[in-house]
Image (cartoon, rainbow, N blue to C red; front, side, top):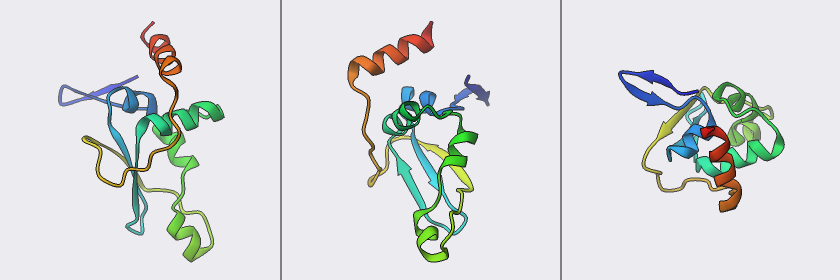
Length: 109
């Protein structure tokens, strides 16, 4: 469920980020970051049966650069939402249109 800050809605899960077209920027403590297309990221979590709230998303992600240099998984420090999508956004496999509309209708009802 969305929360409000200064009268504006803020997404609290990947579905809301995708529905409102906000890219998800994941930042590591070492300074590395990546931005993801929200539709593909939501679909990835949805098909795996993982929770899509941002706290759970942080627990599933890790920095690839830190993994290669340190040899261990480093969890991201922040998840931010951005609009419009920045160049170099990582795009994962997205749901087909019929499936996406079914999911949106389920959340509306």
